[in-house]
Amino acid sequence: MDLKSLLPSFLFLILTNAYSQTTVVDSFLYGGIFRDYRVYIPSVYNGINPVPLVFNLHGYGSVNSDQEVYGDFRPIADTANFIIVAPNGSFDGNSKRFWNTFGGSSVDDIGFISALIDTVSAHYNIDTTRIYCTGMSNGGFMSYHLACFLGNRIAAIASVTGTMAHFYFGTCTPPKPTPVMQIHGTLDATVPYIGNLAFVPVDTLVKFWVNFNNCSPTPIYNLLPDIAPADGCVAEHFVYPSGTNQSSVELYKIIGGGHSWPGAPVNINITNMDFSASKEIWRFFSQYKLNQLNSVNDHNYLNSVTVYPNPSNNTFSVCFNNNETKSIVNIYNTLGMLVYSISTNDKQITIELEEKGVYFLLPDYNHRAIKIVKQ
Image (cartoon, rainbow, N blue to C red; front, side, top):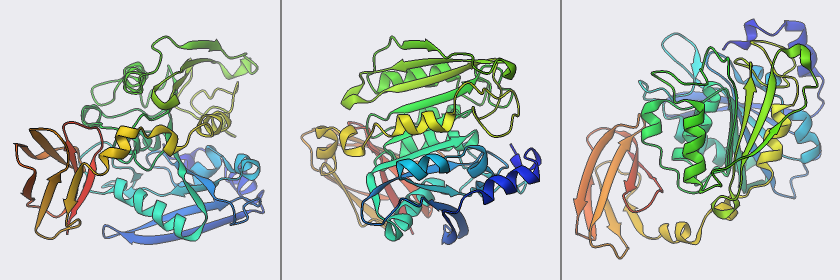
């Protein structure tokens, strides 16, 4: 969705210039591509106290400055005191910015976001237990991608009009219980609520996270007051509480809603105005910390498998520091394709990968993926 073609230029300029707080625009080279991003620093930030970090990801064909206005968290950050990072995706073959969540690309967006966390944390006092990600459409897909494959750094995620591609859904291996909020319109023509050959249905996706987090299968239901009847849609709210380590899953089902961000400053594709998606997302995020969600067993896992050297330009040694008699190792590339698999009784094995790049090693007895890099 290209919001530049949808937002009147005067509205964009007015909303952008309405803030006297600091926005920093920067970039760095990652994976052979210059990746740029915007950082919003609220006026209440003092650099002394660690603050949360919220990633706000644009949709396909959009850009970070559009998303900063369309799904705006800045007024909330000004009082709640968190830093917002709005990065840009890379360009696809059609010169459209995108996040690599559909397959067919070698761009390492997971590694880029991880490196961006390190970069921002080097300049600002970030509470690394309170890093969250949300996004619109393709940015929502990327939020789920991070929950699956970078969940050891992301405390919670929220997706607005985004779901998951079937292929990646089948390889999703979250390292911990992950609080998830999904916001989706039932008349979304871009990412259908009921799914299609490419995208997972919203109800299937919600059920996966409810089961994975071990939440109550019976939701707490609430029909939101229809305070804006002229918007042509209503909002239902489902809360699945009591998951492992106090995790939960929430769904805002917009009956009659389109491919849009509830409460946005411009009405496109049938936008629900009965609530603010940005406010509800922050309300949801603010409940969770990474150390709260990581279990004792998950912490112990950090020492159960060792990979070295990492990165490597030749071979990797994998050591199993566990009590299992047999270990199974699967290695996937960034497209989610299985490139190596072995079952072994040994406590140490040597692995050689043919192609340079980023990979994810998954021992079968735990859900934490280990990122490895062949240089």
